[in-house]
Length: 282
Image (cartoon, rainbow, N blue to C red; front, top):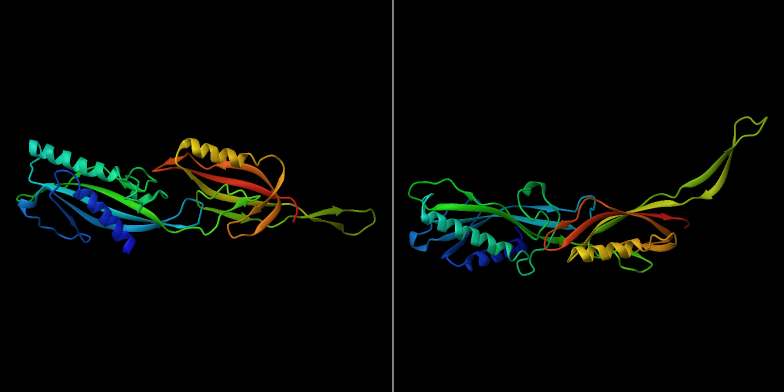
């Protein structure tokens, strides 16, 4: 666990501690047994639940670090009583407090969805939470309501961004540019009386360049504006494409902009895309 991970957990602990009705908040080691005095109830506990590194699908750029955690709210309560109803309300208040501050004061940001945390929402949010669960009730011990969550941040990000004639259209999210090989134009020519054939070299042909990435913006309207700015270059003209690594590909025509799946919403809006260019001449 890194220092950034610990900062995430400490920010969550402070949110739980600020929830009205919670007397004690304990940050635990994974699977650590805890004994909280009855005088310190209602209480909340928070423990790490593993971490994983992710990238956006088909965009191997950057590294998103998702920190999993589990929270529990404890009190003396028997299911079916008013004390238990009060415990449920307190647990929901704790969960709402976390959801109301998803970026954890800037420590967490939106990122790719995880197959390991499909039950958490929003799937691409900076902080994702799951439903409440009643832990096994044991005689003589406080009743616990638990919920899982995950908060993430970009541990590694792209150093540059692609441009079209100097226009920074793609800097809102990670993207990669794959440059294909140029086609070699040839023509086979046959002649009467000639054994075999003659191959005519017609020179280099165009080559295809693919760009895959994610656009991010604060609203659906802003995403639509960013897409319109890209589609404005689909005009049949040739431009200079500069890759994130700073390599120029002049005489490139933007041929197609494709949306890869629906828009995803966390603290911001995100749209995966693929762009096809054709470099007409080198």
